Image (cartoon, rainbow, N blue to C red; front, side):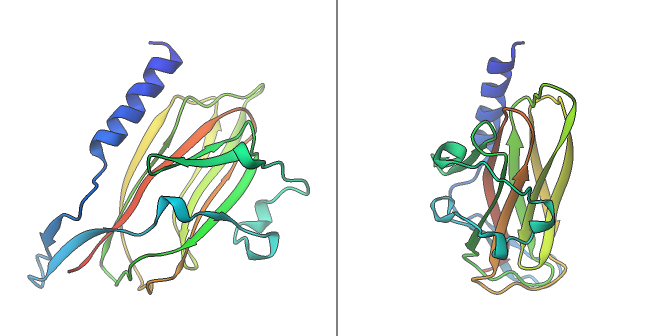
Length: 184
């Protein structure tokens, strides 16, 4: 299977798995209703300044991230490293997360390539806590990561949410959704 059809299949699978409306469940321990709510608004991302970047230790002296470096289309954040070699994006969380709430994260990338083997760093942070992080060896096939994370601390609504990526090579990364199962 060539890279393009495989990549299209990965996107189609991720979109099919995405949820667009709150789904209610019940906390087994307390019997309380829990509802799956979006933690982010895909259209609300903005780039951090060097002073506000929690990943500043990774930041190169020169950052090349133009207007085409990251976009939102159909509710999906996409970062194109052909136009953006380093970025940390931020926004405020839409809902509060309590200890024990479940955070659902779905993100991915197309086939990763570079002129020579290298690494990418891909991370998601909520407040002061990195909730998901990967050092990705390049080259690497396209992948969708679907993670369930149990919150070990509380985060108020409005807590900062960060998506961070740096990469060498011409590659595409996506954030499909970041939701939390919170008390209804």
